[in-house]
Structures are given as C-alpha cells and as structure tokens.
Length: 152
Length: 152
DNA sequence: CGGAATCAGAACCAAAAGAGTTCTATTTTG
DNA sequence: CAAAATAGAACTCTTTTGGTTCTGATTCCG
Ligand code: FES
Ligand code: FES
Image (cartoon, rainbow over all chains, first blue to last red; front, side, top):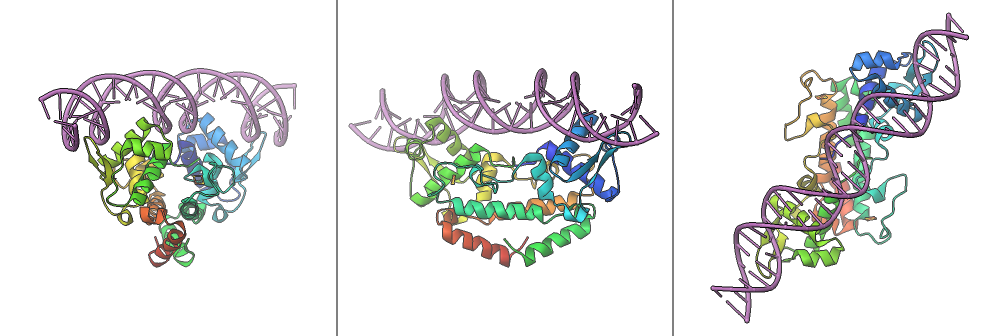
C-alpha cells in the first residue's frame, strides 16, 4: 500500500502541536513527549530532522526547546513530508531533485506522464499548510479553491 | 521516500505492453519476459495479480496467455497500482476500503484534511488511462484538461 | 489419449527498509 | 561547574519487499 512512513506521520503530528502553540511557543522534547504519548527518543529524533530541514529552530541549554521557523501558514505538508521521508516521487527517475536515472530516460515513452502525475501529487500536498491542518473545516474548502484556480 | 513498489512499476510496464498489443493481443509470460527483460517468474507473479484484480483475462493451455480484460482507455493507473500495492491512502486511517481505525477517528482534528488529500492523489491516478500512457504527449494534455474541468 | 505448454497458488528465502533505542558529544543557563 | 537541553551517529529488531521455487490444474494438439 502507498502510505506515509510513521516518521512522517510523527513529523506532521508534532508540527501541528507547534502550530497550535504559535510562533512564540517554545516546546522541549519532554513537553512534546508527554503531549503526544510518543517516546522521548522518538520525539527527539523527529524534531532533530525537522530542525535540519529548516522547519524548526532550536535553542539549546536549560529551558531550551524548539520553535516554528516560520508562521504556520507558510509551512506546507509537502515540506514536512519531504523533511522526514525525502523527495516525493512515485518513480525513482522523476524526483524533482533531478537525481535518478534509469538509463532510458531520454527515450522513455512514459516519462512525460509521470512528470505530470508527480507534480499533481506534490501540488496537492504543497497546497495544505499547517495552519489549515489545525482548522480542518476551513482547510478542506481552501484546498478545493486552490486546486480549482490553479490546476495541475 | 514516497514511491511505488517495484511490483507496481512492473505492473504498469507490463500493462502498457498489453495496451500496445491491443484488445486482441494474447501475450504469454515468456513473450513478455523477453520483451521486458524481467525474469519469467517475476512476470508470472505480476500477471497473476493483475488477473486476480480483473484487469487481465487468462487463457490456459498451449498457446495460452493473457489479454486485456477491457479496452486500454478504460483501465486507469489507479486500478493497476491498487491491484499491485493495495489501497492508496497516505495514512492508514483513511483507506477508502474503510478498514483502518486509529482509535481517535471520531475526534481526529486532521481527518477531514487527509480525506481531501487522499482523494486528490487517487483522482490524479484515476485520471490517467493506459491509452494515455502509450501516447505521452496527448496524455499529459488530457490530464490537464480533466483536472481543470473536474477539480478535486 | 497423453504429453507439452501454459496458467494458478502458495510457500519460501534473502535483502532492504523502517522503527525505535542507546550512547556520546555539545551548547546554554543559572 | 552542574544541570538541562539539543546534535549526531551507531546499533538492533522487526517488517516489508523482491524474487525464486515447487506443486497442481487446465487446455491444446498431435
Ligand atoms: S523509467 Fe526512467 S525515465 Fe522512464
Ligand atoms: S489519525 Fe486516525 S483518524 Fe486521524
């Protein structure tokens, strides 16, 4: 089945916690571990990855923790998922990082289609911000609007 | 990284071969194995799954083989991927088969959003037929049209 | 007939990826 | 300096994937 990894799931879960806490909310791994019922090491690992991806900023030392790097409205699901799971591309040859190559790339008859499909999926995810995730009803409406006004 | 399994990849590859052969084209595993440079057991396994999913019909015995169950224009990428990899749902709780349940389904604040996202992705894949896959340039245009006239 | 070709289904094994823990720095505060 | 926090990497265990093998059932054709 095509599905997110648990890591990405955790990432989204934790990021929504930050979104609820707002831009000024500084949360430590112990805070989040109790809030989310995830183990502390797991929370730790996840937050570190989000920090490396530039979605969170960290403050070390006593009373340290993490905080959103940007406003919740400026962080998309696509970014979170890519931070945790790596590039979103159904087939190896079409990552938008430009890496993979299958050897027949130049002549591959289905390449064009895959490009379109991958963009469609990425755009779906890029169209949803953390802010929308914590306001579900508004969120779903906005997605539909976005897709309508700016189709693939 | 979010990506298709090789099984699904093989499924799509083999189905495009059938699409090129047309509705009347009867291809055996040995035929396809030589055409695709996949091992015969692998081709065999893949075709059996596609048959079970109702996308191919089989003919046993000497000079047997497989053939498209429907016209290539009536078989979508979504069907092929689901036949090989199972339901397409980024999060377990939202398979459209209605199976999974995380325990907080009733009150989950992000459920609505995930439903929208999953449908968007499914629709992208359901909007592409085998026929379009073997005519790349036409295909990509048609996808765009479809999304424009019938957004998520 | 009867054997060869072909599909059907399941079991099986190895390799890779995923999930989670642990350990050892490093930084900051008080 | 000691305590509280993040940083980074290594490591193990489990699950999934990828692929093969084996046995059985069906059909064609000489
Ligand atoms: S399979 Fe690699 S470009 Fe088509
Ligand atoms: S996580 Fe299961 S319904 Fe939201």
